[in-house]
Image (cartoon, rainbow, N blue to C red):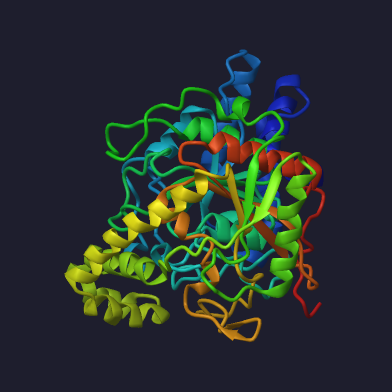
Length: 475
């Protein structure tokens, strides 16, 4: 059982093809592990056992007939803010506690058509608004590496599920770091592809120009496999990109010798960064020299987009629910209540100013990418912090300095404004044994290079053999 739970999607596919394992056997094993582990971490909030076993039987038959599809029999988790036909989808909100979609999101449909087996839905904060995972419908999710800590968010349930051996791959989405933050906190690999690479239809209003669909995996190769399936144009998403001309799984292969790489400790913004996080991330960044890259440390001095980020996500969320504000105030997550007042105070000038700043910011980022192939940073400014009931939404202080509500995610949300692909790779641990992530950002449309760099780092500094103990710091 243990070995199966830690196999990658590619390893499972190989074992299926050789007849060494069956999809039904694997699904039963993962469901049994879910019985044991999920009560401790609360990663899965809706299980689809019967549906999964039925799909696994069909996958088993497909292998016997020699008609296996790209993800045939691979168990997958879907974040609970993504439409799944016939499966409860709550968005972590009591407003949608009993909502059952009548159609699949495009990415879910593509995963199913590729043979993936849906195990269930994973937890998130209400509407995915913050970087922890807790809500009033299902409660909090905790970090498999330390059950007292948060897994991050908003794709915290997906990250915890992959890290704890409940599934090899999981879907997530990222509007300001929601794939990369929990990937860093939980020691898994997560990629936010270029904006529009994976269609986002249908979805609730909000995050209109920031949300990216992607996945969280234990290996870089599995992430490329998932992206090959989910990516592609759609007439239902006006922002969907044209078909990628190659295959990510193929194009990610090869070395990265000769690349020019920039490492930045704080993107020049002066944000506080935990000293251990910075030490581990900097060491990882400089190790790209050993991979044949030219590495320089930079302080780009980009404009601070923190307020623009808050204006965008809060004003869009408030407008999306403006006709049900009384219900939001009554049923919504308590720590969100001040958000309503903040958003109500914004003016049209505040919203328009974001677009002007965004234009200037994109120009600044483009100037760096004109000189460097990749930008490396710590993924998050802090390791995982305490997972309290209903908060906190972030650390109050980092390295003794005051931390604002979103300053601890200062490395992630900038690349949501620009749409560049960015990944988080596990790069080490702090003194408490908590994972630390290194962010790798690349030029727009060049996920293949980001994946190739991540794979080169993975080969040089393998992380898969280190597994969480599923204990708290008091045990």
